[in-house]
Length: 406
Image (cartoon, rainbow, N blue to C red; front, side, top):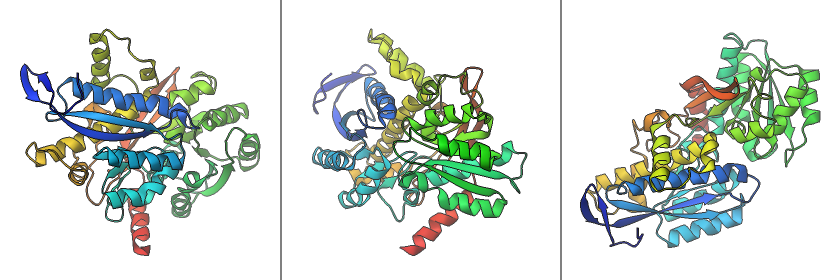
């Protein structure tokens, strides 16, 4: 079908004038985090294709412009300028450094940008960052959730316990530190941090230090790219029980586990998730049915459910923001400012459980910081803790403290 505005489409047996909205999507398909991008971005495109196949959003077809930013800032800045020129009403960002670099540009150009599970934790504060939308648990919220999970696994008290934090030595890896430090004081545990230098493929010394010298009761990891698989192999090789390890969201995908040697090797390994995992969601079944109806094979990317589903998650929230904006204008074409307000009106949208019970407001662009825990059990990922928030009051306190500095 033609993507040209003004063409005719048929939906529900009735013809209507086809209108169009442009979404911008940044991706990394060739850089250091391509493992994520090559699975996440197809999920985004497939959800948009599904929506378009059903007549679009309130009569509007969605056109997606994707740019591979290679996980680098200069191409990300160029992508934003292209999206702006093409009239994009919103933008999916990719990479913490790129997100931080674009924060002011988004505000100047009045285009909302989403950074689910990455970017600055401070961006959850919609009053300070009106066009930045984490729309998923920030690194602060992930830190709170990781400690809450460790506390639960260790019998309900962390007093006198030891927790190791194994992290990628960059700004994203360091960002959760204030939350960990405060929780160490309030909960009475000893925190020790272990930095892994880029590219994160060597951490034998750090893991030896953790397992032989520090001997923690629990390990929290925050690693990216190929480094999560290295951490699984190293911890397993040193005899540390993976049931006492929990990874932040970029170290808990099927690709990480496969690269570590497979589900059997990673038995017991826990990972934080901000979107549903697996294929048992109606929306995933609908996408499979769409491919079959077109006589096409179901794409292999769908098997990498952690990242693929996150792509669906992001696309679904983008579509819902647009839907809210169009409805608010009684069907008239919305501008980017109105789509921003549409994003701030999302409430009670769960997409059959793939999306957490979030509520995005003008004040809270994170949507509450909800996560699940999924664990490798019996050769597959199993949900072991449903949607929860960890130390939400501490996260809010830090957001307020940051706001008071500005």
